[in-house]
Amino acid sequence: MSNQSTGLLDRLFHLSENNTTVKRECLAGLTTFVSMAYILFVNPIILGDAGMDAGAVFTATALSAIMGCLLMGFLANYPIAIAPGLGDNAFFTYSVVLAMGIPWQQAMGGVFVASILFTLVSLFKIREIIIDAIPQDLKYAMAAGIGIFISFVGLQGGGIVISDPSSLVAIGSFK
Image (cartoon, rainbow, N blue to C red; front, side):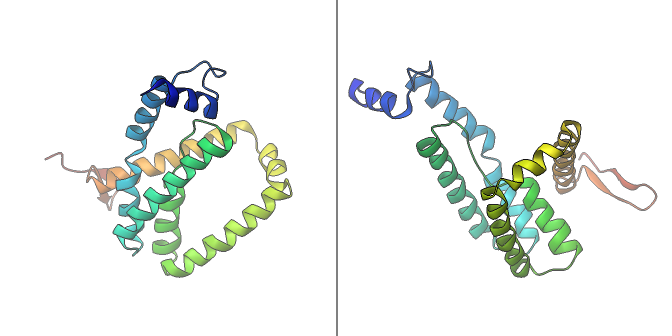
């Protein structure tokens, strides 16, 4: 990379001010991509279970992650990667669509209405009041519960956890 383009990136992203280099940021970006790339493959499987087209979900996942990351980089100047929330998508598929029997198209309408409400709640600073009212331990517990649920779904998909009438779940075959 030429000194001219390095200087442009330094000015654009304030690399010197943040005590970092182009090389370090490129390595961090590559590491982040490799650690997050699983969502490109898992998200279509989960939303495909709801009846959505897996190819379309793959494309939407990739495009939304690209847009989110670019907006974080260029508008906020934060090195934070953004991608669709797997926990939310698992809830959408397994709780709303499959368990409640709501067609995915109708459930998506609900997601759209919820996003408008969330935007209004955020604009009027009500979201901050609600978040500040939740005890920190409960916040940790919710994050852990979502992580365990996603792990459980993955273990079921891999056949490691299977259904058992006497104990609800059992260990599957490792063959």
